[in-house]
Image (cartoon, rainbow, N blue to C red):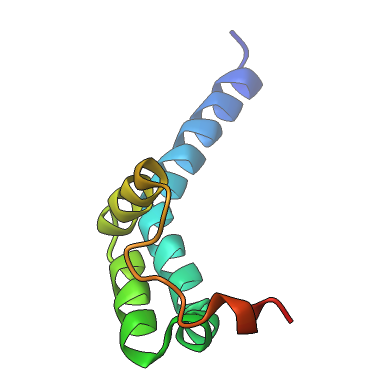
Length: 85
C-alpha cells in the first residue's frame, strides 16, 4: 500500500469521526431554525414543546420515530384549514 492510499484512508476515518460527533448538534441547529414555523402552526406552548423535544439529541429522533409509528403528531396544529392558504 502506498503512502497516498494510507493518508487518504486516515483522512476518511478522521472526517467520519468528526461528522459523527457533529450530527447531534446539527439537529439542534435545525430545530432552532424551525422554531418560528412550529410556533406559527402549533401555537406558542405546543410549538415550543415540539421544538424543545426536537432540540435534545436522540430524544428528538425517538419522538419523530414514535410519531411516524403513530401516524400523527404528539402536538397537533392549531387549525389545519387556515394553514392550507
